[in-house]
Amino acid sequence: MACPPPTQGAEPEPRVVQPEPDRNGGVRLTDLGGRCVRIEAASLHALDLLDAPGLEHLDLTGCRPGLFLALARCPHLQRIDLPPGERGAIIHWDRHGSVETEAVIHGPVEHLDLCGRGYAFGLPGGRTGARSWQGARIGTSPAQWSVANEQALVWLGTGGTPVTLTIPPAARSIAIHGAGVEAVEADATAAVEAVDLQQVPDLRQVTLAPAVHALTVQRAERLEHVQASGEALQLKHCGDLIAGVYLDGTWSHALLADTTIRDDTAPALERVEVRGGERPRERGQPSRVHPWLPANRRAPLLASEVPLLLEAAQAGEQRAGTALIRWAESVPRRNALFALQTLYSLLERPEPPLERIWQARTTLARRFSSRHGPRLEWAWNLPEDLIEETLRMDFRLFARCRGQVAATMRLDVYLRNAPRSRELRLLACVAADRCVPADERHLAAALLREALAVAARGFTGPHRGPGRQGPPSELGPLVRWIIEQADRPMADDLIRWIERVVTVEKRVRYLGELAAHGHAPSRAAALAIGLQPPPSSWRWRRDTGQALRQQAMAAALSPPRSNRLAESQAPEETRP
Image (cartoon, rainbow, N blue to C red):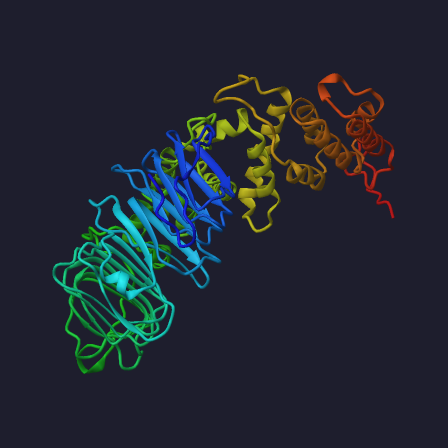
């Protein structure tokens, strides 16, 4: 596909890039160069594109459908061509520093979220049967907005004279953020399903002729009139709390947060939640309703409803807890950590359904499991910025459910018999975290001792494949925890294990930390490294080898700072 002519100059043909995805189908690219780039990789599943200041057009039609696309620091990117197919792309776009111009996405889009200077939001989801949107547009011009034929539209307000935005007939999902919009309207021919308006200080009126799936308005202090009907309505910090908002329409579920409805309003609301605002009835008497989810609601749970429903569930409302568990089982990949945190918080409710909560966790793990992991239980296939905290929250959830749910024994056996360095480090971090409840810290310590003993005896997994041990990650937290606990047997197990799996550079560092607290086997191992000539398998350069031998000798011969790991039980002595 040829690139459209850029604003300055011209490129007759796009630059073709054919990356090699990793085993999970992921690729990270930086500084592609050129204004138009075409990516060709049939096995590509996830693409992180960073630091491409000159890129204007990204062509991904040479990839398979259903891409995970993360964009950051691409200030002039104006067009993205996605591969055709039933599955849409999931796009996370960091637009900090971007030029505020039109950007168009051609092809199916399943999810799109944006963050930039002063905003962070995503496109609202439509009805359950509609999987993807055909095309998306990020706009700032009213002229382009009214004639857009994309199904997902984003408006980033730039201030100026407030305008009225008319939703085009083809648009299904609408997200508007920022000043400069005084009214939003859609006639009966519009196919709009979901509208999300955030941080719209100039907004006064919303008029939607067709029934919509969801309408959300947040931070619209001048809002006066909402004329629309549908399934789910949310008004948060809208209108004047004294004068109120005139609401005209029929809704299956409404959430009012710090919003007052006018006395002369006559809407048909099957279920209403009032948080901080008032809904006057006869003689001006307000009615406050506790937050709960109606049992007959068919609309999917909105992410913004989770905190209110969690509060209701912790207060004992059973239907709110049921709705949250169902939501946690079906969240997208990027929200897996949020779902685990919500399930953990549900344990604070009276008589929590432990088996049902753990079943939801297992369902989530199956959906986002990695085929390359040793076991299903801890083989989360998530973005790198989420995996560590997800594993930590997963263990805490396991610790709370352990003993009451038989299914957790599989995870218990795995931690004791097939540990990896990442799990050992995670258990050490949990055991040392004073903010974690004591019973969870004690369980982490017990599992850590048994798991490290197994690792020291030798994990007999195949050299390649799902059971491969792999190189250890940073073990500093584990070493520090052993020193803090003054656990000499664990220190012995650690040095036996790292002798097989850790590079000599890291091994010298860890031996030095243990030897500084009186651990004699670490001192002896460091001395052996310092005295023996470097074997050919180390492949040292002469200067590097000499420096490492000197570091090892210093660790072996320096006097200890304390006797926490010494064999004798003498009182600890600290070097001045």
